[in-house]
Image 1 (cartoon, rainbow, N blue to C red):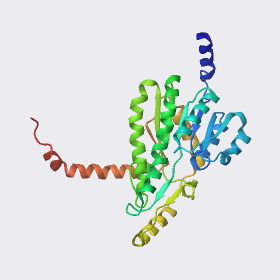
Image 2: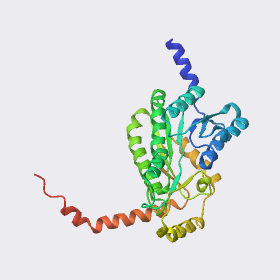
Image 3: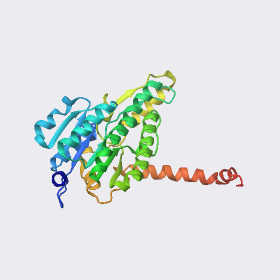
Image 4: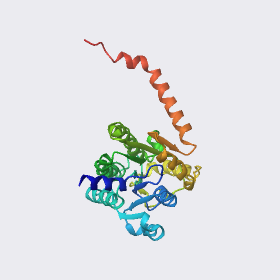
Length: 293
């Protein structure tokens, strides 16, 4: 039996010197999820592609055959998450990369959004990815390797009005993955947070946006903000796969990785302003320390 287990293990592990990988991707029906799923398959990797409606990714099976496994998955349903992750692992024999990509944005000011809108957003953007991570970790630990990727945003470091709750979900997403990285490193598992800037994806589609009930007093403000989004320069999603592949193929991938050229300047300015404020108030902050006994 021991010999048989070793044989099965040898079959399921990637052969030395090869770059072929097995992916588990949520939100594979559109946007980055679809772009990255197809790019991985085109380079010869195998992918368990998931979407809320399996029919929306049926074309992948027709085009890529046995290299892809399509699964219906709503990340807000924990039991469905467990089943999908286990089925993908059993089908391919291993999971090299677990990519949490499913998510959407809630449009509305802080005052406008209802509690149920906020809970639903967090269920998909935070609780759902955590369910995927928790389902995958026992399998990745048993393997002794794996790479967890999470699609966040540069809005995981800075904020914008009107989509403040979406930003808050990404701030939480970042904190969870940073803690996770430290916790799973001893098991040989890597973690990377992918932080895209503005891209010409379907993220602005009705499937990726939900609107909170509006208050008239914010109409002009929101209209100006939405107009500014329409005029924003956007990157080409098709230009991103090679950068992503450099991350997953790296021996020591970064914890955080910006996609696009606009992220770092914006975040650098934000952090410089924060540091300046903290330093300006440093004396008052220090005065609140008190004396130790």
